[in-house]
Length: 271
Ligand SMILES: C[S@@+](CC[C@H](N)C(=O)[O-])C[C@H]1O[C@@H](n2cnc3c(N)ncnc32)[C@H](O)[C@@H]1O
Image (tube, rainbow, N blue to C red):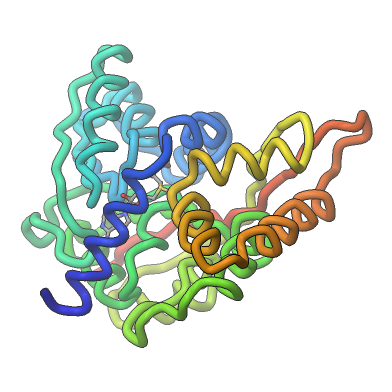
């Protein structure tokens, strides 16, 4: 297996680990609605949700009348997505695939969306080129990405200090939360962008409870716990995560409320 395939294999195992569906519930209300407010989808439009996970934005787009395809690297999550879509009464085509090599024709979609999704594919330029390629001329590209300085961006920074370095070809996921990075990735693709910040509320009883939730359910944190427990550094890393959550806590009643920052990128393909 090549190094790239190896890494994708590890990513797939990471996202299948724990209970991503439980995490997705915490981010289902605000970010997908925010994205669809900035990049509305019309009835009958062909929409692609890249790195769809358990289908948060795909299902909302389908409920708005769009004809939706949801693609993800991790088929285990698509099983849950299909169950949720059925419960919501919408038909969506679910496809296992890689954001860096989309199995669709040029210009196949009116709108291409991704919520906290494409930022996790390692080779940013490959992914950007694919998003632009499968979007038709005049179509829309709408992305929601955690920013480097928000809760999840900082969580990845903490984990990054303890975990082995990623291979050279892989860029850090929070970079997609930077507007200039997105502009430069699409500079040659004729996409005009507008950007706005949004905030996802995470409500838990305490920083400790949020950390316990993330180390049990959220693949990247769970995999870090496994690896760092083995080398004896998890306790220290975990204490930093609890401290991070305490530092960002805005609740005044002794519980935890963190409004985690994300970037909404609304693009239009002009060529
Ligand atoms: C944080 S989850 C977001 C899922 C979903 N969009 C949501 O809003 O809940 C990240 C997703 O990216 C997917 N993913 C990671 N690397 C990918 C790749 N190279 N191609 C396609 N999907 C990928 C994972 O399988 C996972 O479902």
